Length: 106
Image (cartoon, rainbow, N blue to C red; front, side, top):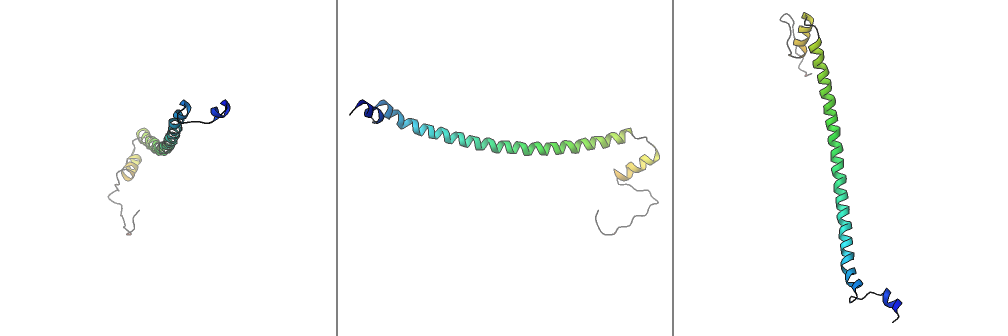
């Protein structure tokens, strides 16, 4: 056998042949681990994006509530303001006002 053909063929007895037995499965295992980790990272990223959208919506709602409360704080405390506040925030109505229930909610 010539040196060229001997170089191209791998025996189990040669050092290259023994290493190849362990290298190929190791490379396959590493590739599979990388794929699994990539999929996991993708799902975690998707969950983080959804959480971010929920938090931004909550922030928008809270900013609107802050603006409304600032309005109530800065509004003059006259009789019209007190009546509006009592009706909208506390659900109160004047004693002389008649309320009719139609049986339908809201």
